Amino acid sequence: MTAHELARTLLEGPDLMVTVRGYEGGVDEVGYVKPPTPIHYDAHTESYYGRHSYHEDDHFMLMCEVCDIDNIEIPETLAIHLGGGS
Image (cartoon, rainbow, N blue to C red; front, top):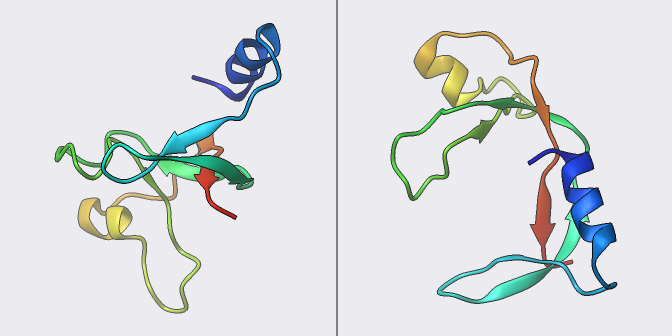
C-alpha cells in the first residue's frame, strides 16, 4: 500500500484512532511517522522478521545487515514507517 492509497482509505471513513500491531494480539495507537527511508524488498524469508527490511547505515562504522549479506548497494526505493507508542 502506498502513502496516497492509505490516505485516501483513511479519508473515506470516520475520524478514528489508527493502530499498529502490538504483541500477542494487542495493538498500539500510531505514535510516530518516520521520514522516507530506503527499503530492501523481500529481504527475509523467515515470516517472523517481516518480509522487507529498512536500509540501516546510521550506526558509526556499521554496515547495513542486508547489504553486507547480499553485497548490494543502498536501495533507491523509499518507504514510510508508522510506529506505535509515543
